[in-house]
Length: 261
Image (cartoon, rainbow, N blue to C red; front, side):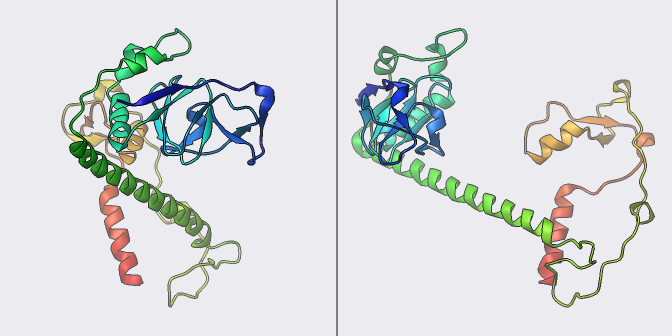
């Protein structure tokens, strides 16, 4: 269903850092966000992939897939596939479901060969349906990329504001809300709030119900939206401080900012 070209690495003595030479794709390190990102160049042409070809990683990590917007030389860590958007998304799915795992060989270095790639069995609809499936999944990839870029920009903005919205030795922050112009006062943290040490709670005190007990790993997991294996609870006699939920804090903070601005 698609022409597959296995890569062949040029001699390393022909590698360069000259963008005027041929772009070399050796493996996953030469791809970012599903696209080839030039990193190494070569004066020697072995096997090539044309602009628009799919690039499949055949060595650890096996199955990663991307595209190239350039004519490139491909090394032995990848294969070039002339396929449409449907084939691209299908190969993504094969990686996600672990299709290549059963073919990966080598105790220290996983890889797949040309025979295993060429003989991979796929389910293929008619061309019109292929185009429909490829188009909607491609649109979603694009939307995800935009959201990731927006997230990156917000993280950069927050990092800058963390530096600018707090007062330095002068007592004045560089960035402030309107109508605020007085100097910030220095104070000791212990005079502004109750700071207490946390009592160690042993595993034998954990319960299946009661007051939710958060360990450091639970807080990190919830912040990253990762699954927590088991939620832990304790008796209320162990409570030292009652903390508001992160969700409530975030909502109230944004409401406050909206009112101030």
